[in-house]
Length: 246
Ligand SMILES: O=C(O)[C@H](CS(=O)(=O)O)OP(=O)(O)O
Ligand SMILES: [Mg+2]
Image (cartoon, rainbow, N blue to C red; front, top):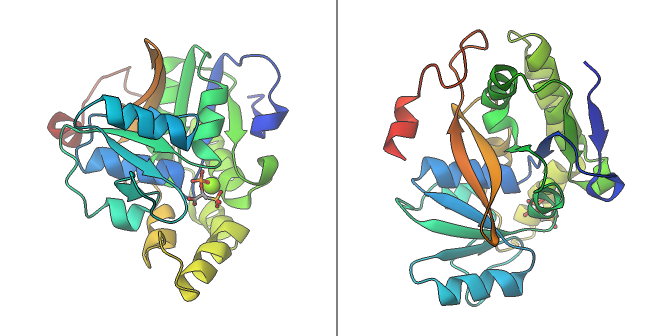
């Protein structure tokens, strides 16, 4: 299959099928937010927009990358988000790379967001959808981030072979600059980094759902979506018990 791999700034036109990859950490965080019960994630274009959305919608939470900041409820850290109770909540997310990449392709007919934690479900969803060739948006380091490229190539491999082994792809991600930067941030005591973040970003297939982006009125919204348990199952064939609890 003739997949394409492009950084956000390299995109030309609107792809038919896009998978936006941000392993460290936006879409690992998004998956954890859904696992902790979030109903939906609204992708914001700026920190100001995130705070405006939160201010005008009672009960919404706002999340950003970097250090904690006034007005924001939490940060872009799976280690921190996994401890939250987000049942039924709407979370507004703004990060440097991941959310920017998703907004850039929000008009495509099918857009999924992914990290390793949902890689296998993403491949199953794509296969069940008959998606064909995919444009992978590699959000980190102008399209060159080793962890995002490894995850994108793993999803493509799983699309072709649903027994493909994640281990070589995870090794590349483990050796990435982003993983080293998070470890260094932890060593230097940066706020907004949790000791478990790198490990949580490198759990292939942790969650059974894919994550789909759609426009809903004026908002760009990410929601979990059921993926068949096996690639041979049809769309929506078998729903995970976890999804039933979200
Ligand atoms: O929070 C993150 O890990 C990054 C911040 S940065 O790009 O490393 O400065 O954001 P993300 O959009 O999740 O890559
Ligand atoms: Mg990233």
